[in-house]
Amino acid sequence: MYVFLKRMSYPSRLIDLEVFFGIETSVISRIVSKVLDILYEFRGILHWDHHRLTKETLTMYAEAIVSKKAPLNCVVGFIDGTVRPIARPTRYQRSTYNGHKRVHALKFQSVSAPDGMIIHLSGPYVGRRHDTRMLRESKLSEALSKHMRLGDSTFVIYGDPAYGLENHIISPFRGANLTKPQELFNKRMSRVRVSVEWCFGSVLSNWAFIDFKKNLKVFLQPIGKLYVVAVLLQNFLTCYNGNMCSKSQRSCSFSS
Image (cartoon, rainbow, N blue to C red; front, side):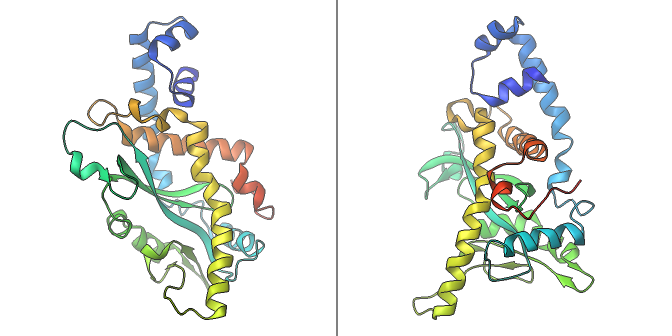
């Protein structure tokens, strides 16, 4: 496990790890591949784990977000698309090219909670995939409809304008002539959302191997697996240490 964590924490060359561990690069490569496969088997807990996301946990999330001056008392998380740059592929260059970021990339859709946990992850998707299509293909809306109405409580997640308005997904008011209350709503929700989005950056800062695009070659590396496992590792680390996101939401403690 130590070999794998060392590999994920920094974009080192295999030869550097050979010197560090005193193990041949071929053995290191097999260890990394095997541990990656084992951890990837736990990816299901990133698909809205309703056994953990109980009414009590979601209520705790909503209270933590309200404590940061959010105007709603039913928001439990924040949805966003993440663009992960990759090396330019030899094939499918057009489909992997993200025009907004001007890079070849894969995309993932994440939902973060105020305790710093990423509670839903889907992907990878090709770099040109729009957020609304990722949402549709992820089946997240169906999961929310099933698990976000608990007794007399109804919860929602918040995203940017691309996600529109659904039963359990809300977004900012749009238009050129917003009222003062609408502008204030957008401003306050934006502030809270920024504080929670720190957890996305934590994945890259702690598991820097997936942030070095020259290492990420579509037909040579299992990039999708690597990012999913990095998110799992970050969630484990957050459970142990917390992170900037959870520390900014002081009223939100971790649930087991």
